[in-house]
Structure formats: C-alpha cells, structure tokens
Image (cartoon, rainbow, N blue to C red; front, top):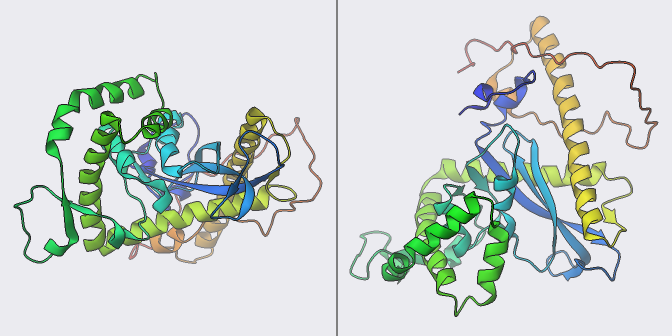
Length: 335
C-alpha cells in the first residue's frame, strides 16, 4: 500500500511520499559509549571502543520506527526481525534493508517464513556460497558461481517444526532474537537451526542472483542503507555532549536510546512541516518543483536548530496546524 494511502487518524504531510513508499524499513546499529563495569558493555572489535549498540529501524520515509539497545558481542542480524514485529506504527513495512552485519543464513530462512523480504547490502557477496538446487543441475553462463548443493531432505524433515516456530512468533510467544540466540548456542547439534539455515541458503541464493543482475535493485538498497547511516549521524548530533550513557541499568540504557529516537522524530516532523511551507511558497512565486527534486530532500536538517539554546516549555500556546495541502509540481515532470 502506498504511503499516501495509509490509514491515519491525524493530518498527513505530503512530502514524505516523495522519499519512500513506507513498505520498506532499514536497520543498522551504531556504537554507544558506556561507563565500564556494566552488564551490556563490551569492547567492540569494529568500532575499537567500549560500549554497546543502539540498533535502529527506520522507514524508507526517514521516520524512526523502533530502537533498542544490545550488546556489542551479538551479531546484529539476530535483532533485525524484532523491530518489524514490535513496530506498532501506521507504517507496517514488509521489506527490510541492512548492511552485511544485518544478514545471515538462518535469518534469511526465518524472514522468508515470516513473509518478510530481507534485502541487505552485501559487501562481500562474491565470498558467499551459492547453492544449486541439485548437484546435476548446471547453468550455461553462471555455473562457476554455484559451489554447494541444497539439502532439501533436511528442509522437508523439519518443515512442520519450522512452521510451528513461525506460528509461535506470530502469536507473540517468542521473539526472533530469542529464538536465534537459543538455536545458535548449539548450532552444530541443533537440527532445527540447521533446517532454518538450509532454507536461508535457498532464500539468500535467490536474492544474491537478483542482487548481482539488477543494477536498479543495488541502487535502491544502497540508497536505503545511506538513509540509516544519516539517521545515526542525526541522532549523534541530537544527543547533548555526545552519545554516552552513564547508567549501568539496562532499562535506563534502553530508555536513553528510545528517548533519543523520540526527539529525532519530533525534530523530523518540524523540519518536514517547515520544508512543506517553504516549498509551497516557492511554487507560489513561480518556481517549478519536480518529483526528482523533492526526493533529494531530507528531514535530517540541523543548521537552523540551536542545540544548546534556551528550551522553554510552553503548555498554553498551540502550534500552527500542519500544512497538508498538495505541493504543486511541474506538469511536465510530475510523472
């Protein structure tokens, strides 16, 4: 369902529909410093610093959907499905983008059964194994890509067990991250984990074939992952004195991450309202606007905000209503 047609109880700004459809989400983690001697703090290998990971899910319309705080030692892909299932906003994406850390074979398999399309940006896709459907199957031009064969017997044997797991997740009895962590603990002995991994090999192979052959798909995935990187920088800017959590309480750490996300959404809303007013004014002055031009805008604007200014809470005056009128476009370029 296009973003402009999503049901909403409040006035909807038109500008976000030029940024995305609302059908896709992007997930990524960013390092957050912690004081030492707490439950989640670890030395992160990639960031080279002590702390934890603020893991965010945002919409392709830039809106932050869900955030939580996790330890550095956990593979980020374990938590990529949680954000979509816990998301209670009007936007309900069925596609999720991420970087290489946001994918793995079991996650591909679980996402497939949950009806979620996992479309990550693969940094080293040429190092990933491609699985042929049968050892006797050969392809004329791309056969060297396929180095292994799918074990369909393992998938058939545990198909009902996997479906029971999916039904439990959909019923809210277990979260994907909890399941993947438990199964991964004894992955070599756990046949259910191996079944999810085998199904994920099929799903990932199909995605990689599409990824390497479709330039437009790669461009769309790169554009999406760039948005989450900009969001991480936006949250770092919003956090006063830098992103540093002094509390050792996991609940307070989670609150800090979520509060920062809430402030980010509030600033984005105001920026989008201001941009809408400016754009409407430009069209009234005779300046033509196109879809391509509006798609290049972003609500992550900071130059006009006094981050260390005076903050006065005024509960008496009401803010002006949002400008929900359509933004006039140049008729030649509107399509």
